[in-house]
Length: 178
View 1 (cartoon, rainbow, N blue to C red):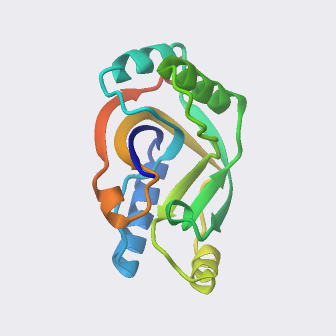
View 2: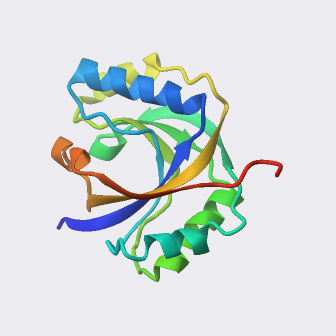
């Protein structure tokens, strides 16, 4: 059953942001798929947009930019994980997820699995494997420097669902070493 939700995204800093956006745009063009911004979803919960600013304030207090280790390009038959970059979990990311979960006072069963999707499209396993092998990520680590709240349909299962996403708030994260 679909519901309206708020997804909390980490957005990559430059130069990774441009690299991933160009790759997403190219894959979408070649494969007639939706275009979206590169992001790592860290939590999906209740749809109260009124509380987002308060949630951001509570969840990001003393939160610095987050650096994640890129592990591999992978894929799955799941629409929202057709093709993606898998990242390693770290303490800072787990803490931000915990802070957002606590600030939303939401009992969502969302499980954090840090990945950055590159394509949302139903593909054969053969086509997915060919794409996975063809993509080389030039970064071993990616810095994420802002948090965004996006109103969406959950679960996202179609191009129309992706195209209906609406940003409701964004907040930069602190600087590394400041």
